Length: 501
Figure 1 (spheres, rainbow, N blue to C red):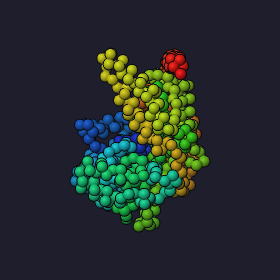
Figure 2 (cartoon, rainbow, N blue to C red):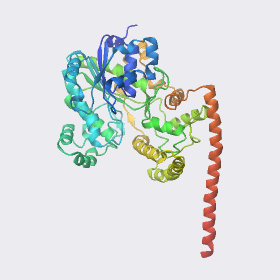
Figure 3 (cartoon, helix red, strand yellow):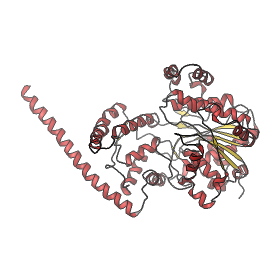
């Protein structure tokens, strides 16, 4: 099969940052399975005392690589970990490794980032902005570099409702070079005090520092074959390499998990808003294909502006949060997991004030009671601490779930149209034909398998239905008791007040 994408990657050496994360793992897997790359270097940092070599060995055992290894047991031998840290000076890369990267790398994909929305600004600037400058400086040393993909986010410019595939420096309160200078010259405490003025209209430190990172590319990557990839909210895989694969509890995935677990019963969301969600395998195909386009554009106009590729649901095939909640809930009732701790019902509000009141009754009061039970059993209380994390996460998602954003995808759509039929099949990212019901079934099955560790078997589903039925009865009994007690309290209050009037 003749394919421009496959031909481009043949015998190429690729360097990836963020290769241990959700998107990075699938990028690595797809490159090894679908192309004939020569070598993939990827940045690995020491974590919690675990050395780089140990993390690499653990990384290779991830279930996302099972299909690849069944097809080619030696595929991961093309992987070479590079010890480093995006938070360290010069990315923490040794001089020896830096010389290797500078001499060999032809394709660079920078995906490392902190996706914690409420990260202290000092830390967010280091990994989401300064690291972009450092990776750009490294890219300038790469003598064979043909393409540099910087992974940003579709919400890097969420201060506007209609987002085009262009840069928005006008929304930054201060140019990126001055922000980085201030970060280096003042104390951490002083810099954090400056955070509200610097962030301005941005809803959190994540989107703000990702916007700064884009300005680094705009201002400091001139002359490089560089482009920006802006994916929306990334969820599980749809088709590749396996259906529903997901890598941990982050963002919206964590909320869906907590709801299916019977742990969360009140959501802060506008159900009528369009949900800007995309499967991770589709995102990977965009990233891989965009590297080819960036190389072509750079050859045609080396000094032109970096192309930007946004990736969100198609205007002809949108899905709302109400659709998402309804389809996931339906799946949870039809094939319930056996790990739930209560009946998985949810109520929704888009009002933060009502949410703050509601969580007292939906979450905090039951949480305190369950923590008391855990203490009496000699176990460590955990419910209130967990609920605080859930509420923080829910509030951090509100800027993206309270209104609909319109995002232009002209460049991405043109890239899709330029691909051959064979390439479209192998590197599919056509959101206009995505079957949302099928995708949410895959998503829920993936959460069940990879997060609950509950394989979907007839016995497991039968056990889940038995547990669901029991919790349903207990839930109705508890609600009846609570309503009765509340009604009795109101009755006593009224009967005691009437004689006094």
